[in-house]
Each structure stands twice: as structure tokens, then as C-alpha cells.
Length: 269
Figure 1: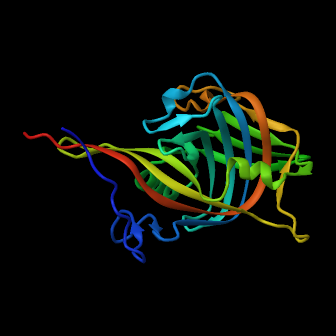
Figure 2: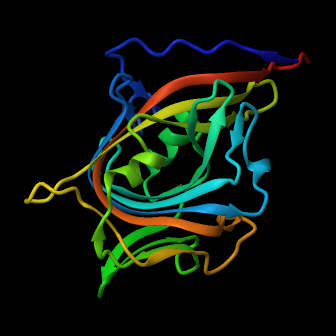
Figure 3: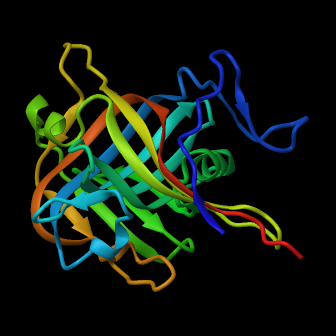
């Protein structure tokens, strides 16, 4: 039997969300502040998407016309989930209330706590992979490999000029809502959960010793060196490049709530 359930109230303030094992949880999240990050750096490429990707977006969300996509490859120097690398594919969407946000169809991390917290709490479809951000010669390169040695995506930039506030704010303003399609399977007799979850990203660009924001642009872009039916990140194909940027930043991720929830109740024997 399929039933619709109303959004659940968030945990009481001050109560930390923890995971299994119950006496040694893999992660702890403060429901008021969420997960916090500092000492981060990353590459972001924004572009129009070539081809139809409407099947990637769940009920309650609609794509821009034309569809706008982005890829972020980042290294988080420290966080309340530990240090790790992350690759995120994003699609700009509008929800049924007309609010713009980002839907996450693919996301990869290098840390088991980040993977588990993202999947269990937010429904982010995280997998483990090799994710790096490196500087070589005049370039900064962000890469996703899965398995290691098989490059699936690279973002390359020669940072040659400062990026204006308006460019970043146009795509990722403070408090941007993000959306994940959370599916929780289970053994026979379990209640199966199917939800659209909303969460929020607050990103603060760091400043250098001169007081200027550490955000740069220049020649660069996104490429998919190999394709994979198991990890089809290349479905967000580049149509028209819009911008590529290098950022150094701090960040906070906060759960926002359940947009809709459908549960399949356990059947009777």
C-alpha cells in the first residue's frame, strides 16, 4: 500500500543526529548548524546542458529552459565529517512554489562518514570514488576517477583574473536550496521510503591578505574523458559553456525538510 505522509518535524535543537553503530556512530550532525567545512578549495564549471535530461529530475521540480548544469570538484581541508574530496553534478531547477534551487543527480566523495551521512539523512546519491584538486604549471585541475585510474570527468582552469561577485551569486546565492531524491529500500516486511528532500548550502568565499575574495576565472572548462554506464556523469553534457571558476571557501550544509514523502507499507504475510 502506497501512502503519502506529511513532512516530519526536525529534531529538537541541541540533539545531535547520529548514525550506527549506536555506541560508536560513524557521524554526528548538529541539527541547528548542520555539517560545517573550512579550508576548502574547488573548481566549478557552469554550462547549458546538451540533450534531454528531464528524466533525471523527480516530481515537484522542473528544469530551466534551456537546462543549466554545473559540476563542482572540491577538496574540503577540514569539516565536522572529516577532510575529503567531493564531485557534484548539479541541475538548476524550480520547485512547485516557484523557488529556484539545485538538484543533485550524481555525487561522489572520498570519505565514508560523508557518504553515509549524505545518503541516510539527505538522500544524496553518494558513491565512493577518487576525487582530487591539483595545481600544475599554470593550471588547476579537478578530477573524478572511478575506479582509480579511470578518469570520468575533469575540470581545468588557468586562473588569470578575479571572478566578480555577481557571477557566483547568480548561480549559487547564499542559502541556495538543494534537492535530493531519497530512496530507502529494505528487506521483505520493511517500510520503503521515497522522498524529495530539501537542504541548504551557505558558501563564504575566503579573502586573501589584501582583502580580496579568492575566486578566479580564466580559460578552462569541463570534459568527460571516458564514459561509463555504471557512473553516467557524462549525461550532463556541455552545450554552451557559461563560466569556470576556482574558489577557496568555507561552507555549511543544513537539512531543510521533506518536500514530499511516499511510503510503501509492509505487506501482510
